[in-house]
Every structure is written in structure tokens, then in C-alpha cells.
Length: 270
Image 1 (cartoon, helix red, strand yellow):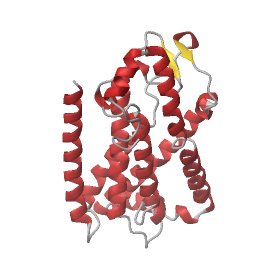
Image 2: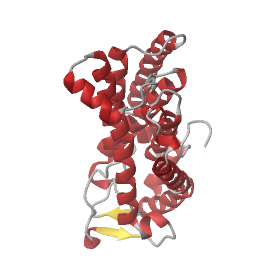
Image 3: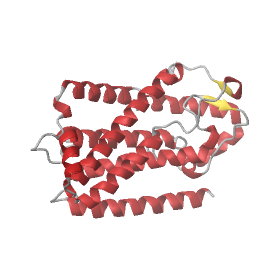
């Protein structure tokens, strides 16, 4: 099973890289065409939306064993989820706004004129996916897709708190046959892509002038600052604590899994 999972992952990665090379080759000298931009942005938005949404409601206290931790995410989980939700809508909203502007520019009409006047009042703006933003978009999409894969693989056991659920099972298949904490690695890959896409030349956030407005600067600083400090730094310590919790709960079963899957986040690195 583990060999089959790793084989499927390698095949998916090869196919993704092949598509990336094709897109990068076409965008090396010119920005992507409208037809290429729209599906890529929509795929990115869908992937990010589901990856940044908790896959299940908060479990009841009697359904889980909460472990003491000084982790901010656990101590203020509802605040954290609310902040991530706002960030999610910002990332997805920018994708949808850029999609609307691209379609409006490609299909002129009175409605298109109204859309452009509302979303892109600057006549000199030039929305486009450059080499950097194309790579960033693929990273955001890929990271989000892998995290959703983790949601599906763990099922009801996937929560945003450090806890052991009632009738909890140790899952060692799918992405968990490659590294022990793939959802954290996927989260960091996704955010890296999202940040690069947000601030890259030709992006809606930049071309619409939001980065030059006080409100845009505040939003960008708060979102990037929080997500970087909390949701990218926390997993590095959290992965070790989760290993300790699972080792305590499952004993020999966890030790055998750790032997087969020795890396926490990045194969052959960490």
C-alpha cells in the first residue's frame, strides 16, 4: 500500500511539473493568455478555499482527549479560525476579482465596463500572470490540494487542535506514507505561493493599487505577519508535539510507522 501511494504521488508530481514547464515556457516572454489565466486562478481559489477551511466542526469535549499545550492555536482556536477565514476570503476574493477583470477585458459589454470601473478604475493597470506569479499560483494550488488530500485521508480524525479523538486510529497511508505531517508542509507551500502571488508584478492586488493605499498596506501587513508568525512557525514545533502525543497513544504502532516514514515534513530533509 505504501509503495502504491508513493508511486501515485510521484506520478502526480511528474504530471504537475510537466504542466508547469509548458506554462512557464509559454509565459517566459509574454504573459499568459486570458484563456490560460482564468482556469488557473479559479483552480487556485478553489484549492485555497478548501485547504483553509476546517474539514469538520469542533468536536465536543467528551469526544476528544485534549493535551496541554502552550500553542496559541489551541488556546485561541476560534480566534485563529476566524482570522484564517478572513485571510482565505482575501486570497480567494483577489483570484475572483482578477478573473472578473480578465473576462471583462476579453468580452467587452456595458456590464464589462461596469465591472472594470468598479474593480479596476486605473486605466494604466496591466493584469497578467508573469513567470513568478505563474509559479506562485501553481505552488498555492498544489499546497492546497495536498492539504485537502490530508483532510480526506484522516477523515474525522483531522482537527485543528492537538487532541486524540474517540476511537482514534493511526493513519499511515496516502500522504502520511511519505511524511508524518504532510498537512503542515502543504500549508507552508500554499502560503508561500499565496504571498508570492499577492505581491507579484501584474497581480490584481498590485495593479489595482491596493498596495499603495493605507487600508491595503494594513491588510497585507496583518495577514502576512500573522500567517507567517503563527501558521508557518507553529507547525515546526507542533509536529514534534504531535509525534509525542501519537507515540504515547499508539506505542509500538507509531514506532513502526516512524521507522517506515522517518521524515516529519520534507522527504530526506526534515
